[in-house]
Amino acid sequence: MGEAQLSTLPTAAFFSWDNFINFKVIFLSIVLEAIPFVLVSVFVSAIIHNFVTETMIEKIISRNKLFNIVPATLLGILMPVCDCGMVPIVRRLVKKGVPLHTAVSFMLAAPIINPVVIAATFFTLRTNTNLVLFRLIAAFFIASFTGWLTSIFFKSNELKATPHHHSCGCCDHDTDDFVIQPTFTEKIFRTIHDASNEFFEMGKYLIFGATLRAFSQILIPRAHLLAVGQHPILSIAVLMLFAFGISVCSSADAFIAASLTTSFLPDSLVAFMVFGPMLDFKNTLMLLHTFRLRFVIWLLVVVSTLSSMAA
Image (cartoon, rainbow, N blue to C red; front, side):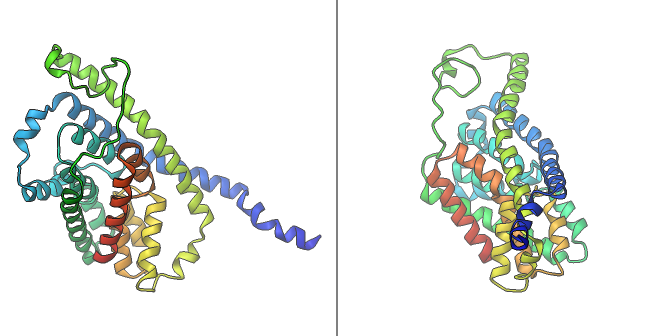
């Protein structure tokens, strides 16, 4: 009877009231932290959809790949968007005619190379500025190189087909030349409508990712992570997996990295702060919803490989 009681202790401990409270706190903190960024991103996406035309984009974008990729990598300085909401913006840009490799470079770099994240990282790691600089340099290299590889391996936009059997006015149609162009007021209302639809569409993936992240933080003891912190290879792999699973916003992951500086090697901390904002669990779900499976798998392999090499 004693052995039976002991065998049930881990299960009972997992379903304890303390774990329930921890799950609730983690889940709500993720959602509340991400929602403002998702709101900003879907409105940016909707504004691009309704106010930016293909002609405008063609005039801005250079035909030279180098002059496409490098500015896109640095565009986050002017558009400080968190990784929580990059996918809706990138999808809209690609639909508007932005080359896939340019959009990919922007998507990977903007969550790290933007004033908000740079300031938060400097503030949090001000006693170790090398980590801050390495993070920015690695992000620029990985985003630029991935964009260049994308231009070589993918010639189409890789978006999933989204067939519609009705005239809803909520998506892209190839009939702009045959319809009356909307007025400014109509564009405002359409922007609000499109942003609302995209928020609820992307929100379900945010909720699902936040749920799994909360479970993972309860199930995986922190002591197990610290046990491999000083291994030159395992520490990088573990923190990259950790970053992928917990899906922390890029504006907050430096705070976690700061708490691990005494237990993990600097290389692994750089990998954590670079790979997580580029590709985490919730973003991967959104990418799978938006792009073809082969492209998402390829992107995961390339970014994870480059992140480990850069570290």
